[in-house]
Image (cartoon, rainbow over the protein chains, first blue to last red):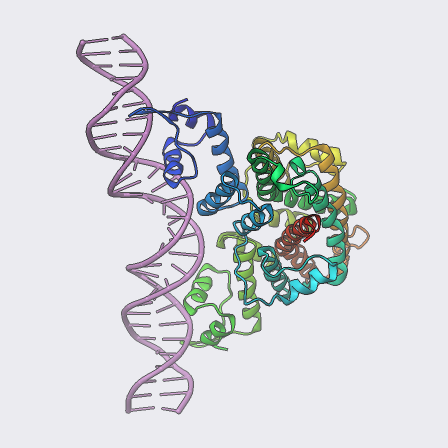
Length: 216
Length: 216
DNA sequence: CTGATTGGATAGTTACAGTATCCAATATTG
DNA sequence: CAATATTGGATACTGTAACTATCCAATCAG
């Protein structure tokens, strides 16, 4: 299809599509002449993905570029790739030295793996500092409740990864580039796009509980 | 304290503090003359809260104004107030008509209260559409796993609200303005500031599960 | 008394995410 | 086949948000 049809089918203005092409987050169509290029459903899906990452996950263009780059050219190590993907997601916080006392205490309390090089560790530290400053600190009891709820969710997510992607028993060399790419895609997009689902569900759970208590 | 000390203690530049005063999200200090105003710890805390809402929760100034306004002047009905607070939180999506088929199916599957006027319902619809388009749709099985994890979390949160704020048994008229204000503060800030905590914990849970599977 | 600081107003800056315009080279159509 | 429309590509422009800087007269501190 031509650019105007891509625009019509996606609901994104032609000028914006050209902008994404310039930014290098949407691959160029196949040139059919000096004034014609051919776009396919791959371009359409990519375009929709860009909009979701921008509007829903709230990513700036630069971070969308990073995330799509990870999917297009995955590192050998899925664990490293996922770390990079998480760095590209909000909130954007930098490590303050290598001390993350609140995060460390919380993670060790839960008995999880503490690694001060994980971006999520810095994000947790920052988030805990904020709730503390606001006068609603995270108690150990609440932390236990959250940990007990979230860990099984993570287990479920990882277990459902395609091709047992994150599975120590499967030799990495056995998997072809296509399978590895699918695993990365699942992990990266799962992180970026499922978070809004989880957040929305959590908000709805609160409203459900509140509604029941009010007897409405 | 004077503005320069407020700036020094908060780490926020004087010019930025003046900007927040202009925007009406930080109350003016008590005037002590034409060129002097006095700021107290309340201003310092408010300033820190503004930074947390901006950098951590990712709220634009206009939405920070809304959220702080809800805390400062709570509605009579906490349920309504919370709805307004959630509207002020990202992602910002508008209802597409009043049909939210994916969200409705999901919520009814879980047996929760479906209300198409909840902003969180629209957010869920949008989030589900995005994961579907990306080729990783939410299965009923996964939905059950998420629901089973999130509902108890919400129960815990609501049960721990100060003064049994959301409690049908406690007559609303018994509670003074101070208690109601505390309840609103807890509910609104709890929603805005605890989400980053939950998201960070979820990311860490994934990394913990992945690390264990890789045997690292 | 004198230099530094303040509140308050106004103007300027930077970054981001598009939009709009132009143009020569095709396509398409009547 | 001629007239009209569309395209890719380059360049320039716009709008918004969140600061940041400058100015000024008043006044506070030493």
